[in-house]
Figure 1 (cartoon, one colour):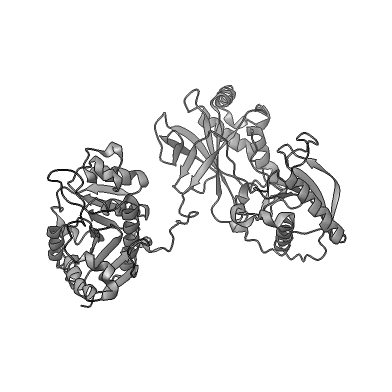
Figure 2 (tube, one colour):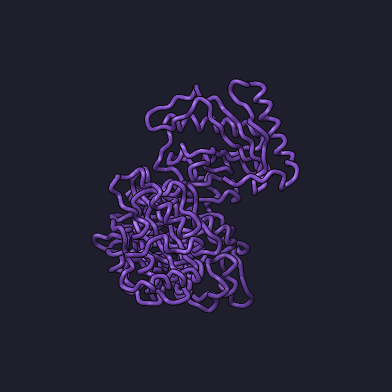
Length: 581
């Protein structure tokens, strides 16, 4: 809890005065339930700290829940502005270790204040949250496995200016093991357990024997004390673990380069079980030099190092951990149609207005491999709506897009097929999972019709395009394995039924010849006509078609989807024409 400093910040703000007045009014209305205790104080962050006492005799406690005394005192910390919700602290440690208790004293009333805190409700709404929190805590209704950072006191350990540590490899069940940090950018280091040559930094990865319910501190000595603080709750024969942590640190620091910081990664067991919480620390370069000198004064006997030998002021900074282990991470697109692209090998022929955006969406959806095919070159006018950058000008579209996709996901393999159609197109039919034609080329469409008849074809074939007049319509034709017609043939079959339906007039332009004013001539001279459309239009159309294609993949069905953006001319925004063999 922040230290109280009366009067340092002057008079309370109007918001704080109103909160105090409301609390006193509630106390006057319900004197047997709530009362304000003593005189409010100001904290070192400008909050108004108001102590209240609540009658909790009506709150039922069950096994595993927090045990409440008949009357409990809480400190409401009311910030100077209603933009932030009040915080609630206790002045004891009886609640330590329970879910949603931060560092042993702060109650986590709001998981997402942006949605859950309503300033219009005033301090009464915070009291209602407190009552609900006490009821859930006493009734053991909290799910400890989802409590935020529960293993390390419920708080995010983060120091300004430190890099993010990316962890994707599983942490082995060893008390201490060596890890290595591979620099990727100025703000990112990747952890690996594969031995690396200097100057790659070595760090110890340590599995702690118990959680850190009060957090990890800001100095190395504080951390070592917190590691052994839970000894009382462990077996009477348990030995202090802090010396082993210090020894492993010293072993790494003497092997790393001079004048470099020393990192460590702590795997902290979660009270609810399951994978440990990862906490990454950094000892600054100057402090690491001091620790290195201490280790070198005891050559050959680092195991004799004890926390008492360490400078109490030796700082430790905390790095953000991007924990991407499969055992702890759920994809944010979980159970969405694009899941169909995960772990797939996908060909995208045509990297223009629709294809370049589709490629990115599929890369982000978790494809294992993407093969791009497009012999065209990036020119300046394309940047208005295609997925390229100024630095790509003059580069082949496939090569420029491949670089972009590789920067999206390290685990994605991106390769380039030369020419308009890959030379091994027949083999691709039995190797790839999906081939997307985004070229709007009649010749390539007819080529796919022939390839669709490849015996025992594995690949699903798809064709995607937009309309010439507005770039607000999209058409997707899908040929699942087993369908002998290709996308071009299915498109020709769907056209008459759409053209005969006056309710689908919006989509008639997809099968009609373009009018003179429909096409855009981007530059003077023999400039190839193109379609109208912005990056927002094309990205939206591509995203919608990518989603419907994912649905078709999951269902393994053939058919044609027609889509229209909300600002397209009136008509149904989606229509599906199933393929009838």
